[in-house]
Length: 483
Image (cartoon, rainbow, N blue to C red):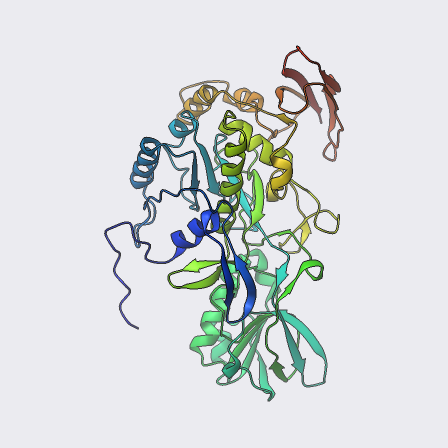
């Protein structure tokens, strides 16, 4: 193996991650883009006329140290940015230094992490930032699989290299979980390997299991891989390789070229399997993630070519772009108002009007711990009618709670004026208050529609709120939850 390219001690992007997310936010229109003919069309960022300031805070081998992230935020504040998009996250601590940016009117958008579908893996969960989950789009890459008994099955791959596609049948070997031991006991050289070990799903996240199987079969000399377990939503890096996610079995098999399907032929959006789930371990009283957006097989530039990347890192710039658009349309709105507009107008149904599902083990109906308010709807977010505003100074008490400097932090978190409510340990009865601000028509009436969680009784007082010309634009209401 050649030596890895050394990290460059200047702002250039060494692995393409930063370039990909930056162009997702503000890339200019480029026609005729594809990956080997797949997903052919026009590539364009969310706000192509925006001006970008890019700060390098992550380094190969060192990750994204708090000090460099804080330095980047300080530089951004000094430069007068309006929105900060941070496609970084993981199992580590919450990034410090973000609050002072919000208190200067800057909206911060963070990726929520790629450690799903395991619960309690979401990160970047402080209440003053927008935390983004990842979901699929209305595009898929079906690949026809022909078995020896003439049965046809369909999986997904990014196999576009015609030289790797043969009309001949190949031997198919079942290697269970495709770990080193099971492959060593089977002759897989030059053959297609079927990997399936669903019982291990509860021990290893799908993304880890898939790439472990892929690496092991590749090193064992296999010609191709069929991963027959659960969806991982992660095919990046498979372009030109015979690797397919599917459920099948036959002693011989052959693949057909991958196709691109868009629109009504694809069930979307779905919360991606890898997208980290709530509740937050650090702050269970703050509902996270806040929102989900497109983050699976996103096509954008990397160097002098275009590639597919998947992750909450790819979903984050979509929300950042919409945040910038709302900021442009409503320059007097606070970061909390912009976040509220995005969260409260999100969709909880898919393109067919059915409840959004979450890819997991097994697939299930998505809930707020999967996608927060739902899948982002940019058009509706520009005109939300009502918003939940927070004076950025009110976050100071929450910050002091994280340092152990205040008592009664559970009550404070509950009554922070967020567009969501989380009660980690509901016993008997809990009461909280929220204040809404009218940013829609001057005269308007809103009625509360309650869909309480199973086993919980919920009431809203008053249940009807009216705004009139010359009256207050803000109204406070009470919510009561009874177990």
